[in-house]
Length: 134
Image (cartoon, rainbow, N blue to C red; front, side, top):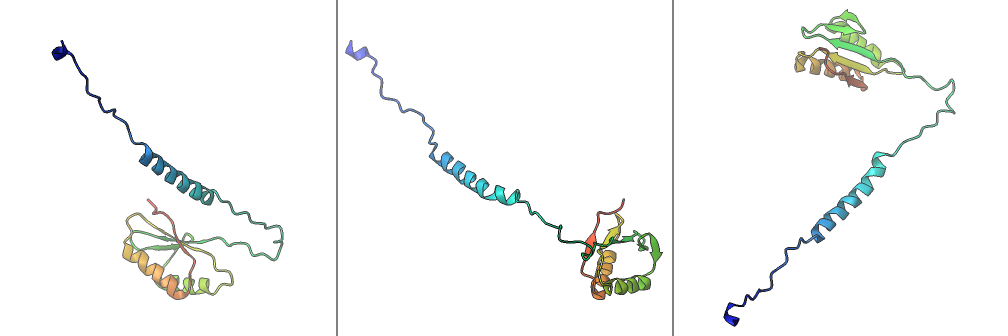
């Protein structure tokens, strides 16, 4: 009977090694613990001491650039020479407002780049770009 006896060999148990998984999770936990306070940090500003002497920010100057190259300074049409003159006057102001460029959707990049270069050459440093007008 011994010839027909079924002997079982010890079988290996399939186990998952969780040590690398725990290591990765701990590293991610540390990364999140370090970055979340920086993201949620709020800066509180106290303007109670600022009465009449504090200058108020002026309204931005909007320069619309049409696809055809037409220019509009706060809604008023002007040419390139008038634009450069306006840049010089704006740069010499005591409190320089922000120059906001608003190109149309299909305006050439070259046109916008030339206007930005002219503004910088006139001494303007506070230049913004709004999304294209459709």
